[in-house]
Image (tube, rainbow, N blue to C red; front, side, top):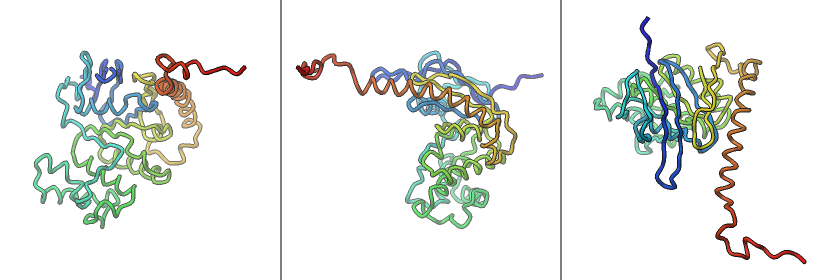
Length: 284
């Protein structure tokens, strides 16, 4: 039987920023199969967004790191994936219809053709009747659905979703999670998903990677053997809670490391401080 290559594979990837210098990522290894939903969680500042920027071709990794897409090593990865950041980034001077076709226009599709294709999807995304509205007239959840439609319309097999629901209230967030799964099941894209929310990662994913505090690397990989389609009541089930307990232990350890590192940066030692500060007078 012919071995099917991973849709996305990251091998020994590191990234150093010259200012500092700062080692943001260190020998990251991960993969995603075709049609798989994979989440990354970890403490703030561990390099999750940096990793996405590298996969998308917006940043270059350090020498020695490799990224394979569809089994082929790619140096220029721009245009191979659709990237949805936390902010919806809808253009305020464009209608919702003209916002969601932006990717198609960039790819050279005529506006009339792009609009016709996008209009067919508005009912699927719960936005029928809002085609001519402008972004400021939509709720946060509606704006995120428009941003997700725009990402789908890029027509890429790989989707990078970087905390797309992070700014939403808990109720809207829950609705959007269910909506995303519905869209994923319909279009069956390969999704890499960044989140700080453990329950969100479990509810959405086939597998979860846990990243360490900076420099970010993979601390653990967990499968999520929960049935699909996922029902919201699943979050109270014993298997769900068991996975959550494991992830909480892993994340808490790394979050403490990240907090301690920030404390050291913000509260440096007394070296170089005036004597009045480094050696305050003692009470008699």
